[in-house]
Length: 209
Image 1 (cartoon, rainbow, N blue to C red):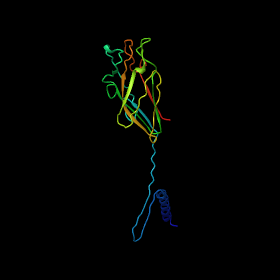
Image 2: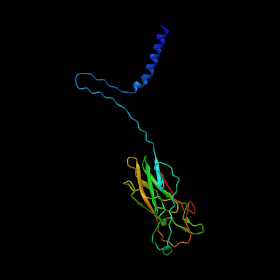
Image 3: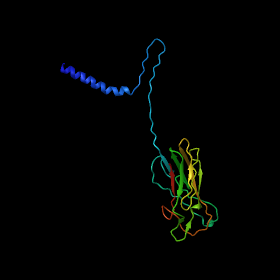
Image 4: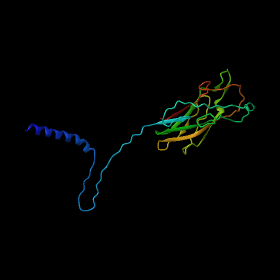
């Protein structure tokens, strides 16, 4: 056989081998005739959704990490110390101002639990001076979704978890959480809590089994 012809045959066979896998993965339909013709072809799709859990309390960006921690500040007027009249937070407190923060939980793997924990009563650095976390109340209000995210009740230690019920395995709840100081006890003068000091920090935890 002519060497050039042999080489040409080999190239054709090689090209056919490359084309065959692609042809096998597609579908075609050929129709002929005098009447109405309908040709059909199918395409299959696969979409992979990862399991996710997102929690935001205060400043944050959806589906991203943000290390900013908001500071909520209360200043009790001297004439109202311990008189039982709740005290609102200062204007600059929280990402939404006036003691209000953005709170959001998103998950897609079933029911979620949400809890809060502290290291104990808030102190001012002096022995015996403390304010119970039960003096800090959290009031949820609607933000963007129809389902308002409930807030765990703050205590000295670990709170009771709040259960978030999934719909079709999805939890998508948010709220405006507004903190206030109950001011129902007369306590020693001083500045209690602070930026991660004197037990002034709350840790919120969302859990998805």
